[in-house]
Every structure is written in C-alpha cells, then in structure tokens.
Amino acid sequence: MKHILLSLLFAAIVLTGTTQESEKDAVRNTIQAAYVEGIHNRMGIELIEAGFHPGFEMLSLSNGLLNRFPIYSWIETVKKAMAENKSIGEPITASYPLIDVAGNAAIARVELYRGDRHLFTDYMSLYKTEQGWQIVAKIYYRIPE
Image (cartoon, rainbow, N blue to C red; front, top):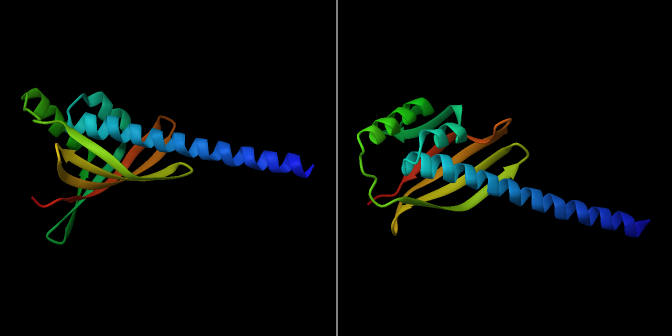
C-alpha cells in the first residue's frame, strides 16, 4: 500500500511539473505572438486581439505621474503605423528570464532587444480565461541609451 501511495505521489508531482511547464510555455507563446510579433513587429492586429484582454492597461510612470494606456489605443497606433507602411527596422526579439504561474494567474519578465541592444524590461500580468492566456496589464522600464 505504501508503495502504491508513493507511486501516486510521484506521478502527481511529475504531472504537476509537466502541467506547470506547459502553462509557462503557453504564457510565453501568448506574449511572443501578441506583444512581440503583433505589436512590436506588426505581424497582424488579430495576434494582438487574441493575446490581449480587452480590459488591458499599460501603466507608465512619467514625472511622478502614473499614466494608463488601454489596449484599444495601442491597437490604433499599430494600425496607423501599418497603414503608413512605417518600417520597423530590425525586428524586436525577446527573452523571458521569469515566468511564474499560479493557477489561472501569471507574471512574466520580458526583455526586449533590437539586435544586441536591450531596449525595455517589461513586467506583464496575465489571466487564463476561456480564450486561453491573455495579457491584462504591463509596467515597464526603458533602458537608457
């Protein structure tokens, strides 16, 4: 009986670890598609709309004031840039030094680069909804040139 219980416990730990890793991969994939490819590399509005919750807000601290930018404003900016065929230059790439998932909530630290230059460090919050993982909030730090 003890052997069976230990086997079940081991299986639960393995399955939990696998599930945790697959959820982290899903969070990373959501951010990569919607944020990096959709917004920064302008690969399509549908990517943005799929990965961002309609209630998303980016918070920006400037001169001691906290400013809020909803996703619909960001989408309009991307649409305008796409319509004007503005070049993005060298594509943006990302690294993900931290992704933490707890149930249906997740956070991610995302570092954005153009070539070798580190541009931003972003902290993103996500919820898992019926549509899958969706980005609900972002704060960031712009790396000085």
